[in-house]
Image (cartoon, rainbow, N blue to C red; front, side):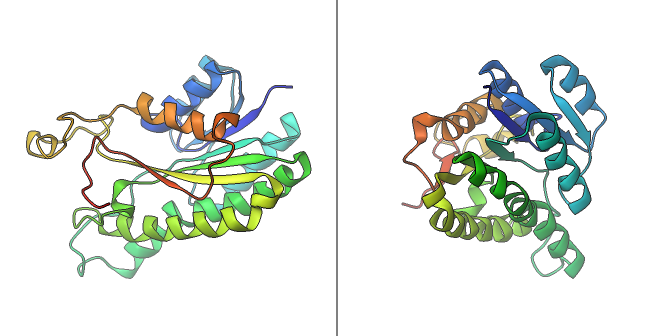
Amino acid sequence: MKKVAIVTAASKGIGAACARKFAESGYKLVIMARSEAIFDLADELDARPIQGSVGKVSDLQRLVDLAHEKYGRVDTVICNTGHPPKGELLKLQDADWETGMNLVLMNVIRLARMVTPFMQESGSGSFVNISTFGAKEPSAAFPVSSVMRTALGSFTKLYATEFGRFNIRMNSILPGFIDSYPATDETIKTIPLFRQGTPEEVAELALFLASGKSSYITGQNFLIDGGLTKSI
């Protein structure tokens, strides 16, 4: 039986690269994005699409329901999302922080709540959260993202501890500057590898963390940033 993967924010960038990589590896896919481009990708990959937002509980529920109704199982969830609001730290309003929490933290919590029972039934499962290097070294350029994705790292640890006994794993990937969002020359000069990463490189790591090749890895945060972060 082929494995089933859910991929969110899948219409472009890292999300689309993950969808393509998992399709190449034989997964059945259920994919979601706000853009209508999700339907073109679904046709390309023979996937089941949902047009919706990770910030809406009802859209996430439709996504999970579609996966379960169509395939009767969910083996992997790639929790990808867009970028939360940016701005000067104390000029950001409550609504900005609430939007960020909904977009990059609550999406994972809600998907975990919805999907975990299916994984418990099948006896295994893997969540891979697409986070950011700012969860390791907070960036003033991305304050909401840095704060909320640090919280996501804590949730990842707690989830891994709670559900490891069911052979269900959760890990997070912390990308640096990926070329789906072009960086300035000044920024690129701060990266030891002197280039941006590619969505395909992130997708390779996501596939590894979803597969049996990483069966003893859970609760971890994996930097893929070309050496950008300096902390040990």
